[in-house]
Image (cartoon, rainbow, N blue to C red; front, side, top):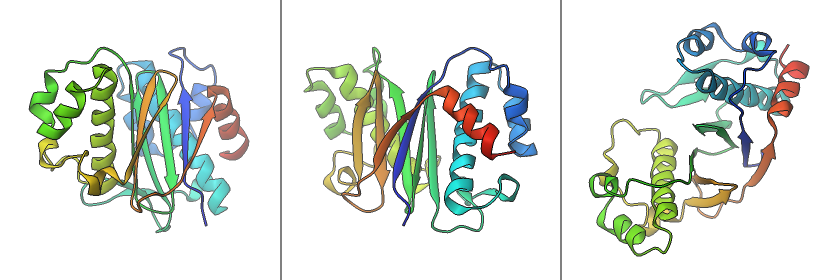
Length: 219
C-alpha cells in the first residue's frame, strides 16, 4: 500500500542553468503551458511540481517517464491515466510548492502567512469561519488556516470552479475531520483526505534534490 506523503519545497526565483534540460522531461502540452508564464518563478513552480510527481510515479509504479499520461476528470481535476489507486494534488505559492501523494482522493493547499485582507472573509467565508478568525489572537494566521482548508477541500472533491466558497463550512465537523492544517517555516499547509484520521508523512526537499531526481530518473 502506498504511503500518504506531502512534499514541501521552497523554490528560489533564480533561473536554473539546467532548465532547458528539465523541460524536456514533461509532455508537449505541458511545455506549451510553461511557455505562457510571464514570470520565471511561476514557470519554475509548475515545472518542479510536475518533475517531482513524475519521479515518484516512476519510482512507486515502476513505469518509465515516457509511459506517464495525465488526464482530467470532467470537472478538471488531474489524474494519472491507467492507475486508479494513485492520487496526487499540487499547490504552490510565490516561493514554495507542496505535492501530495496518496492511495485515496486528496487535496492540498499552501499559503505564506502575511498580513491578510480580513474584509475578504465577509464575502467568501461562512459566519462560523469568520467567527473563528475574529476570535483568534493571530487573525492573519487564522485567516490563512480557513483559506487553505477551503481550497484543500475544493481540490479534494475536484469541483472547485462550480462551488461558491460560502456554500460549505470547513469548521463544520464532517468536513473539518477530513482536514489537517500545519505550519512549516512561514507557510500554512492544509491537507484534505477522504478517510477521517488518515496519517501522512511530511517531507522537506531542496530544489537541488528535485533536479537530481529528474536527471537520474526521467531521462
